[in-house]
Length: 213
Image 1 (cartoon, one colour):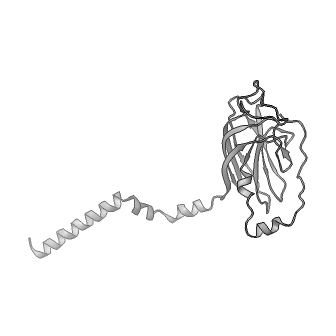
Image 2 (image 1 turned 90 degrees about the horizontal axis):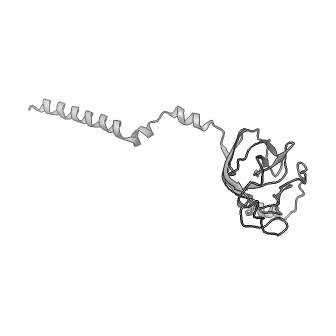
Image 3 (image 1 turned 90 degrees about the vertical axis):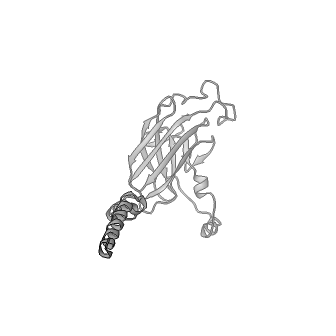
């Protein structure tokens, strides 16, 4: 084979190998993904907060909303965006073991059940703004529920806490499940610690009725 033919053959082989690498290399393909798709994703409303939901403890009041008289457990999660609230859970029920608001053990007849509660609402409370109360959704006999609601984030609202529980006339009567507000806001650091030394009076955005399970 002449020198010219040898160079042409080598160049052709290199071209084939390069084309094959492009076809099979996912790293290369990902690196060359169109920038437009990344830009479109960045335009989506950012997630403000997301996490697990936790069952209540009787006699604990969160921003004016009392806990249910019975303990509740749940396996659930939530996500907050500036324009959307989603949450779902299962086994939102009263456990068979635990203590009621009055310190007595959970009665056997309601342990492991929803105690006849068929709907739950959601309330997103803030440290410095009126709460968002969402319409109730079905709570089935196994304690399953799901929310998917458009919301309008109050201007300047901060430190949201999600509460799930029975609702009446647009007000949450009690909370059965909540976001982990202790983990979210329970540790003061930096300037927050300095602010904590100065008590600040807060007002409950709306009253809550006494009827609760």
